[in-house]
Length: 299
Ligand SMILES: NC(=O)c1ccc[n+]([C@@H]2O[C@H](COP(=O)([O-])OP(=O)(O)OC[C@H]3O[C@@H](n4cnc5c(N)ncnc54)[C@H](OP(=O)(O)O)[C@@H]3O)[C@@H](O)[C@H]2O)c1
Image (cartoon, rainbow, N blue to C red; front, side, top):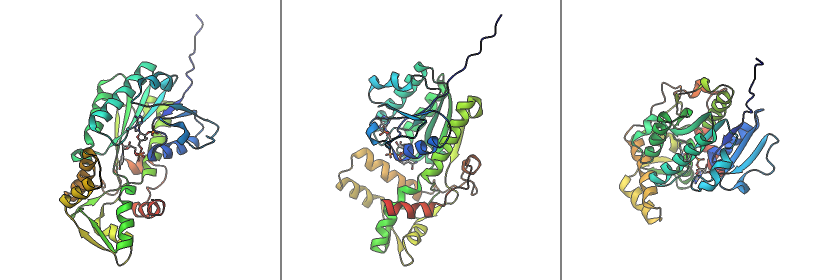
């Protein structure tokens, strides 16, 4: 009998390609010689023109009409966690995306989750739900448990550079903040490896945090030599955010970030390795203070 050899055309799909993390992953994938599709709710927000090996699709995880076409022919999907919204909204998006990926015959999903140290954060729930759904489902998967971005604290530092005071409710806590670009580089590497051979990272959960904890005092020093750190209260922050008109879930999300840093849960740098960060990156992890300073320029 003649042996039949099936050749699977390998195609990586990236969801959320126009977001802060998605753009960096897209830029990294575009440098690899792999066919890849940048999927986003609004393709007009993607770079124009896209590099040669990149195509685009519309994917809105709130819109079932976009799902089948988006995942058609895809072998590996990078599911970027879908936004800043109520937990039930994010869970519904992730369920819809994973169900559609399974129906389309996607082999492997790389999901951008949240570090284990972030279990107390108000936005941890959709991440842990998604991890559990992946573990119970039919797809091969890799979970990237991302730490908090260094870029998140850049607005605090920029304000401190203007006022001379870094006023924030970090207490005596510290944050093992990680460069978003490092997390993107890991996502690219894992997806490219997994697309070539899903067994490479299948069923693996990687912890990806910063390589050193950064305190309120460190952030003040990053803002300028004479800048002082003044710890403020969570109650004051919550009142300010509410007065600024943030929706209640967003007030809870932001407040829980500071509360969790202050309570000391987000300082662990895994003895300076950043968990699995250093071993999965091809280059040394970026210095989070330098990342904060750079993003102050662009904030
Ligand atoms: N680790 C951290 O410090 C940290 C901080 C903030 C957020 N996050 C989480 O990590 C994700 C990526 O971070 P980021 O900095 O790139 O956030 P971002 O710049 O705010 O981008 C939001 C992301 O959510 C996606 N999204 C929102 N609604 C969607 C929908 N209905 N269907 C499909 N995608 C949807 C967007 O995709 P489109 O291209 O379609 O717009 C975009 O990729 C966030 O969505 C959030 O879950 C992590």
